[in-house]
Image (cartoon, rainbow, N blue to C red):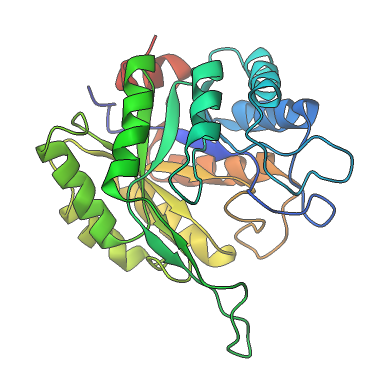
Length: 290
């Protein structure tokens, strides 16, 4: 199934992975996550992409895979936003997927991120030194398949995150190999320093590489330069995502106070392109989830 051309799925990425809540407006506690989700929901987001933070005092800059904490946060979001769809992060380095697996089995979200290929995750300081020790975000085919083997029996729709063009082309092969049900739901992750750049001119070329009927959205990492790419994605029929995981900055360069202003801006861009946010019921019908 596909949405009418004048509708768009809007996703809010509620909080980041390691962002320090003492420095940036990222929610940590169940109450904070639910309140931020409600602001985004009221602004037009129907899907909440969730990372989860350590709840111990002073430790909210660290991630957690504790199923009890994850379930408490997800329950709070669902209570605050009737009908909302949850999209859980699953990103881990290494072959052990036990933490994400336990959380998926406990929460049973409508969607979950499926990192669909490996990336040398790099960033430089202004002086040319590494911002952190070079690391491999490893997602070989056997790991992708292991996540699908968890998601499929639970009825969780995979959201295939593609950090470069080769990963997008791999997802097409996953469909052809029948490892991944078609049409796939793809996220073009743009703006990571060692991945695809956040450039609007790339979008038509990437869409050209997709299989027929593939659903897609942009995930744009950066500052105010990401907004022209959001607009181009809306013009080309893509779905849209933003949130404080992806950026802290509005189009005028000012820092956001949270997720609400980011989603309000994204929805305004969609409407200027003649598109209206899809309702939770419309998104559920698109994904084939109850």
